[in-house]
Every structure is written in structure tokens, then in C-alpha cells.
Length: 223
Image (cartoon, rainbow, N blue to C red; front, side, top):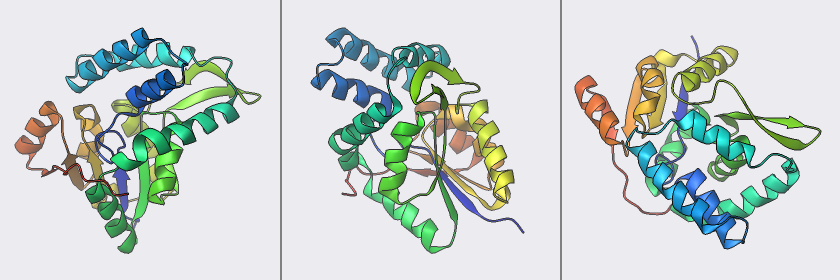
């Protein structure tokens, strides 16, 4: 019999903030990006939440802006960003869920379309060893600006989750997936316990139609 896993999406599931937008906000505070980029980011996040954004094109454009940066510099930026912008926005109820699954001996994983240098900060804060993320191309410690397809998004997220589950002897029919996004509908159908967590309007409707569990967290910080 395979092991039970608990998959946790990151943005709007474990934290009430968005990694992409807050990273631009943080970079703006450091004088690293113009205010126009911040305003555009706010608009794009709104479109994403309304399922009106081509996320792949937007992601590729943003990643191209990082071309030439050293990975170690991005890791330092990510650590500072997380402590300043994200840690205090982790839902207390999300952390309690992680702890409950850990106590039950379930295999924990953070799964996100964000790049690994962002997701690693969240995984470390939650005490989760495994993560599944969109991968970025790195050459000799330098970001090339290119993404490795498919993205960990939509059907791509399902692709990576299925591969990870096979490699780790996970029984998806006994496993859990917590997410806020309708874009994750494919993977939600694969697990035995799909949970619409702080769901967007399309996912809330789908969860009701499928009689899935719906959880809405209070904005109470875990830290």
C-alpha cells in the first residue's frame, strides 16, 4: 500500500499574500523596480484571480527580467523578502493543518508555480522537506531567464505531482490536496481528499458541485 501525502499550494492557501506581487513590492521598496511595474503586477494578479490571465506568457516575461542574476543573490533576496513580506501572512489554520498531517505520518509537500528560491522559504518555515515547483534554467550559478516546461501550473502541476507521487510511492486515492485555484482542478480530481482552501469563485463553484470540502481561513498569523 502506498503512502499518504498532503499537498499544499502556497499563495492564498498557506499564505494570504501572493509571492509574485509581494516580491515586486519588496523589490520596489529596495529601489530595484519602477512603480509602473508594481502597478502592472497588481493588475495582473487581479486578472489571475479572475482566471483571465495567460499565466505562462506573464511568467516568461517576468523571468526574462532576471536573466544574468546570480542564484546566490536571488536566494538572499528571497530570504529577505520572505521574512519581510510573507512570514507573518501565513495562516495559523494552515500551519495547524500541516502539523496535523505530520502527526499522522503523512508525507508533506509544498506544490507551487512559484520558482524554487521562493517556495524553499515557505517550505522551510513550515518544516516541510519536499517541494514541487516551476523550474528555472540555471547555467554556472546564473539565471538564464528561461523556464523549464511545463510550468508547475494547471495540467503541468498535475504532471509533476503524478511523477513525484510515483517516485515516492504515494497513493493519491488516499492523499490530500489543498489549493485556492480553479487552475488546479486536474490534480484535485486525482486525490482522494480534495480541499478547496480560500477558493476563487470558479473553484468554490466546482467544489460545491463535486461536494468537496471547502475551507475558509481567518487572517490570523501563525507567527
